[in-house]
Length: 171
Image (cartoon, rainbow, N blue to C red; front, side, top):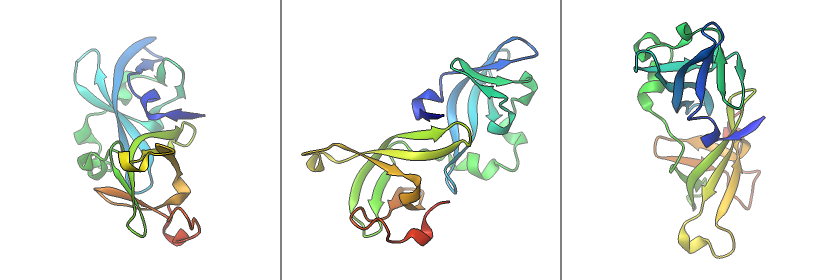
C-alpha cells in the first residue's frame, strides 16, 4: 500500500499488551543511503519522553496507527547504536533541492510516497520554481530516476534522456 508522507505522522502507537495507545508519532527517520524509513520519532504518553519506534517492531499498520506488541519496543535514541549515524544526520526530504545530472535545477521536494510493505520511499513530488510553472507546477520522480543523494540536494537523471546515468541509480 502506498501512502503520502503526511499519512505516516500524527498517528498513535497502539500496544496489544496494554490494549491502549502508548505513544504518538511525531516524525520520520529516513536512511539517506537507500531512502528507507528506518523508524519513527514518537512522544510517549506515560513518560512524555521522546522515543523511537523502529519499523521492524511494527506488527501491523492500520488507519489509526501502528500496532506493536508492547510499549517496551519504544527505545531511547542513545540505545540505538546501529542507527546513531542516521539519527544524527536528521535527514529530511521535504524542501530538499532537486537537480539533474547536467545541473539543471528542477525544484524542491514537497512530498513523498512510501510503500508501507517495504518502507521504501517510491516517489518524490517536486514543486517547480515559479518561473517554470507556466504549464505544470509539479513533477513526480520515481526512485529509479534518482542518481545521487547529497546532504543539500537530490540529483536525478536528465529528464529528456531518462536512460542516462542508470548505473548510479538507487536500488
